[in-house]
Amino acid sequence: MNQSVTIKGTKSGIILVLDPGMAFDQLREEIKKHFIEAASFLGKNNMGLIIRGRKLTEAEEEEVLGIIADNTQLNITCVVDEESETERLFNMSRTVEEKVVPVKSENIDMTIPADVCDNNAQILVGNLRSGQDVSCEQNVVILGDVKPGASVTSYGSIFILGELRGNAFAGAGGDNSAIVMALKLNPLQVRIADAIAISPDAEKGPKLKLKKKKIMSNENEPEVAYMENGHIIKALYGPSFLRQFGK
Amino acid sequence: MGEVIVVTSGKGGVGKTTTTANLGTGLAKLNKKVVLIDTDIGLRNLDVVMGLENRIVYNLVDVIEGNCKLKQALIRDKKYESLFLLPAAQTKDKTSVTPEQMKKLTEELKAEYDYIILDCPAGIEQGFKNAIAGADRALVVTTPEVSAVRDADRIIGLLEANEIGKTQLIVNRLRPDMVKRGDMMSADDVIDILAVELVGQVPDDENIVIATNNGEPLVGDNSLAGQAYMNICRRVTGEQVPFLDLDAKKGIFSWFKKK
Image (cartoon, rainbow over all chains, first blue to last red; front, side, top):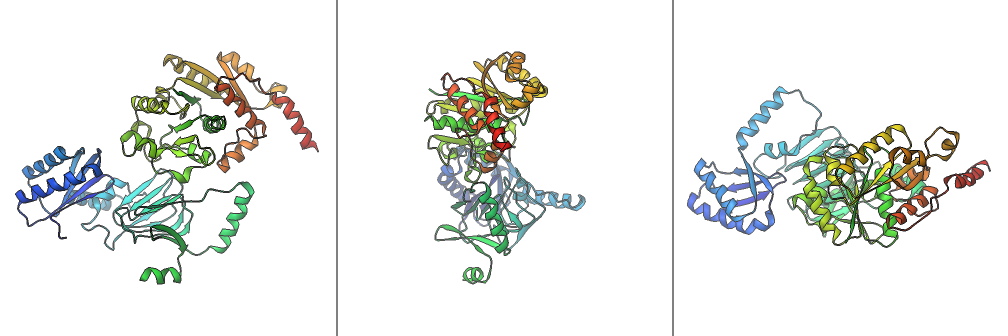
């Protein structure tokens, strides 16, 4: 990373990545500059703050919070100590028997490893039902269906080994190359980076039933949604897609 | 200056959401500017009944929390230009909104729209309090069953206690044949118990189920329920409309069935 200060926004908080080598006085100016620039983008929300790349002393942390308070409308509700948090979650997961419960978004945000969207993936077992909302910075693999009203958000790609009927948001950080793959892709909405695609409106009554049957008969192949020229395209996940995607 | 109408019932499953959808669509048909607000946070349905589920990007809670502008969250109806929906959030719960915030929101909408119709959740807890906070007028939906009428009575009491100006009643799912046999209360019987003004009676009609599943409210079409809802809309705008003779129409339908 060539920048000394980087701000990343996630759903439940902002991540501040700091250069470990630079002197703090210098860094302070950089942080200030970045937050002034990002103030309008960040809006006025309650957020958690995660500091990465550098261990700050309490006094330094105070200063950073001061800068944020002075230059943005954000309300920092907590500063997350990632290391201890990760450890806690890890210990918890060892003691608690493995359950098929989708992990809540807050938890995921804190367990993420240092790099955004490396080749790791979060694996979730079980169906996501209406009202459940999973978001994380890694790729996501879901062994189950995503029902209408449920949503999955990822900085990377989303792979659903089941049917997608709810909402999926891949490349939430702006990654155009993210894809959404599902064994059956019948979503309400798919979003990739800045593009959004909505499902066609259902046709009336009996037609709907007929249509569904037809689709079922010729679509046993997995499907994929990806972005091309700013549009989201749905295709069969087959050789032709893979050739294109490999480029 | 618009009017804020809350559609409520106390008991669940009596047809609040269906009524809200049909009322909104009907008023839009009458060239009114209408916003429907789903206040059932966590169990939203109105978007499904309206067939707008796939268009949701922002919701009520996003507006309240300032994550987006009000205009961004309003979803325009597929058919009617002057009809908008503000959907509920599915991943939050009812405590994420306060009555004061709802009041502020409805005040804001009043300036631009003729009718703001709130779909109230079942129950009398926070969701109900949110929904009635900004209401000028209430439509209480009930079915002709003792349990629903009992809950409606409680609701009317609460509405009066909260000084909602005008409370009117819709009796839903009437079955004229059962009423005739004396097995079901008639709309008049319900009115006798509840002592409020009747604004409409809607027959039990299978077309409602079909319309709901298609995501297209049936108000104004040829079905009996469609006409009943259209009449309610016109009464809401202040027009005097005689009540449908559910029984006579039923006669024609059964004649068709026999054939």
